[in-house]
Image 1 (cartoon, rainbow, N blue to C red):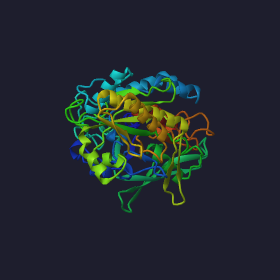
Image 2: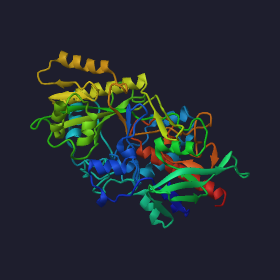
Image 3: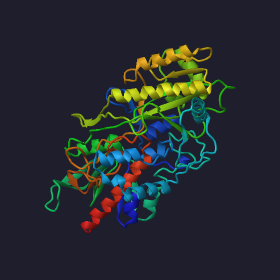
Image 4: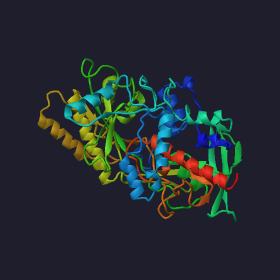
Length: 493
């Protein structure tokens, strides 16, 4: 949105809570990366601790720390948003053009020079089981063999917004990015010229950890703090639409693992190479229904230790000694259920989410499917992130032994209290719709309560997308930017 508005000649100020890191400043170390580039140093979670919430806090946001996966909005999801939510934009040529513009600017391409250990395991296991699989398209070149992008891309090859859109905005001479600058309040008041109850006037923000505060008066204001923090800012600013903070989707995910000793399975280390290059749909329901995806994810030592269940000190040490040859598959669920974002009496954020029975079924189906993939690919030991910590020895196991183990996995379930669960895709908490009774923003991306106040992030998605949402989020923002331009020109700003 900053790039589109700056190119149209408007003056744009971007406020970013996190700091800016150029490629040469990225350490690739877990400690500095989590402290400097993740919300709450990577320790953010739902109020009961059941779901870890992984969100970016740096110039470039989530695109600076994600794993490059690029999906266009699936047709069945677009149809759902048109038919069930009345949002005709998603069947329009305008949205098609936005998708393509984002695709081109991010340099998304389909080729992979080499799959790493984990992605080869997923591909080969699916192949042996006759399961559908495919190569993921990414906003990085085919030779991008970097296993460290969770903490910024040290090569600069990943085309995050800090490498693309924000550069475009600044290069016009019409935009400036203020990093380490935390927006605290959106100003709004009644206006005799406004068609809505309120009109946005700008923002107040603090710089760094000190008392310095700035006030920016703006003709149009865009809130883009992500689906976790956008509702928090709006609620702290006094907006009262009950749909602000409602319908939070998380794409709840959990992970299974398979151990491949040296000399077995593919070559390499699990933490080397392209993080996500292969996927497989969860074979539970029709592709047009709410289900899930099998994808890989990188687990460096600290995250590995944190997410693997605790049984004993000796067990934990043995697992870590096997770290480099332990392959992971993450099951990403398209959640039908939803949670909420609220603020408490101290105005602190509270995230509430419990996985629904429907979504738990999808997650468990994906876990079982992924374990079968590991076994087919030749793993000698497999397990889940269920808190019991069972490690199943595949060597010498009969078919009935394997089926009994998979039955135990299903019986234990995938509730927050029984499994390590995480979310890297937060969506829908200020969803777009056709009525203030059911949504927080209108089809133009403008808040129902305030004129001149727009939302440009994943919180506006009407439902979960079911795929990695980066391209969808940016494509909607691309369309919303056009709405902002029309708004400003209408009032001859």
